Length: 145
Image (cartoon, rainbow, N blue to C red; front, side):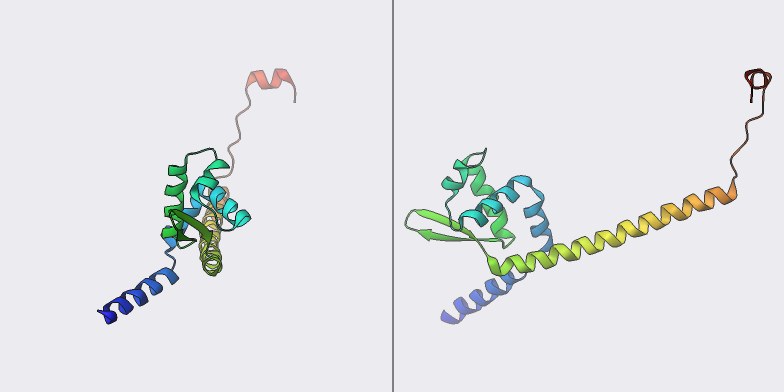
């Protein structure tokens, strides 16, 4: 039984170390969750009730946002009696920063490729079809040069 528990703990530790890129993006995509993270950074360890006092949504909504942040590995919870207190997991912030930098680099490459393709198409269009000159009409000659 002890072996099963220690194997389970090791598995959970490995899983908690590897922040899923999808979970991370989901967690930080929402402006409300980013606000929750900002408050956690400002206050350290805090309850959902205390967070809700500073946010424009309910304690239940705060708890749901904290659950998403917890799944992403960005926050940790500690039970003290009846209270659950949340705090930032500093060891995971560095992993999150590196993961976000990788995502940003991939998007920079994608957007760069799109830009190069659009520029090359624009150049090709200019070479293939010169701009058409509109024939002058009798009205144009009366209007002047």
